[in-house]
Image 1 (cartoon, helix red, strand yellow):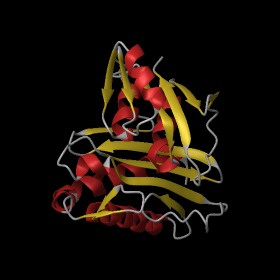
Image 2: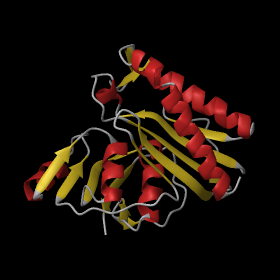
Image 3: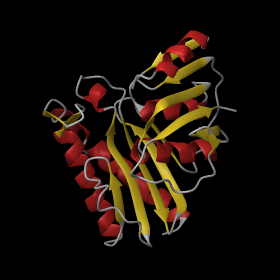
Image 4: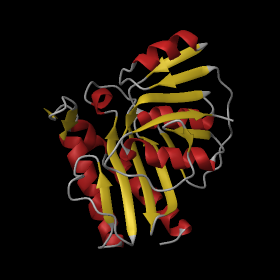
Length: 232
């Protein structure tokens, strides 16, 4: 797969999600809770499987890092295609009836980035690698809803701030300039961050991971990363 084919594949995933949106919405209140206390709905499971099945039709050997199915113990990167997916980012918002949730997908081949997508179905917003984008200007800093003492300090220093509870929403808005900055000092896994971070690099944002400039390399899916992104 090349970058042109990746963009087409991501557009097809967008269509898959939108074509199933009514069914996905019906599943939003079928909720279970994971060991860490976070919610997972039948919609999360349905959408992850649907996207994985679609990608396997394109490449039966594709490797998959998805929030609901990833096994850190068994993980071993291998050559070939890799998909990084969060089927419903912001599940707490989603199962509470809020529209600020999203789908995050990134495609890689032999460690090289091909393309990614941030999609917020109920808000009608989407950004795919290669899209044209008119940047806005803002004074708002977006913060992760996972509490960390650094957030309290950041809130006191920010001119304006928003705490939304959805990485896709935060990443999309800092990329387009609706936020001047997005900060998650507690850390998140790559299915939460990586597709959006790669788009942030594409659209010339400054990306800091764990206090160091990010160079675009594929990240370790078994650990969390602290992130600070600034629109430029």
